Length: 261
Image (cartoon, rainbow, N blue to C red):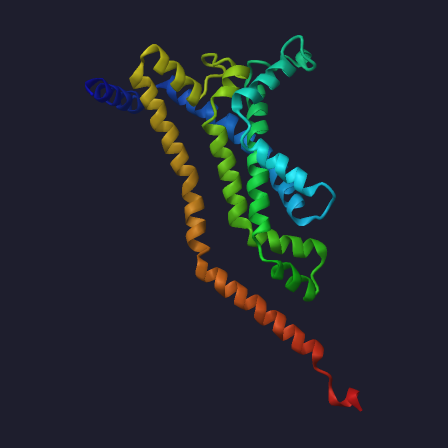
């Protein structure tokens, strides 16, 4: 117990002293995971929405493969990427191994299925009447699609934040392809693992505290959005849709007396 307390005290001292190496690791982690999340979102959100909204042969197979890849072990992904980019591999001439770029590629590989799968669930949960009402009111295909995505925005934001969480907390793949090189490819998770292995618990705790704070700060916007988009707003939104649909139906069915004559 005394060792744990000493580790926390040492961690507080390192954080308070603005240790350059610790904060350098933090900024590298944010850069790698942030870039990976952006790329994975640009791929996963449109792909997930497309799978959910369109009907095509093999749709269930594509969804099953996507959900399966959401549980892809990071070390397996890291191994395959390593074999592709190693010097004797198909893309070895690019010399990307043990660089932040290859770490971003590894995290994109892991985060894209997560973002895609959660987006599929979010878009699929939007009631069919939203699309039907939009079309009945004269909306184009793109406008109705935008309306559905707007209804599913909280789920899509959740998908992106979940993808960032899978990136920032990942250790296996980035360890394999990045090598945990000091001042070059060492991120929060690999540094925590190394410091724990060598018995530098204070250093590891300091990095762990930073990792937890980052996770908390990332989730704050999601919680605020969920609070603003309360269940009562959903109910009112549904009533508004039904009212608009009924009003439009009455307008279509109403025939002026002059026309009847």
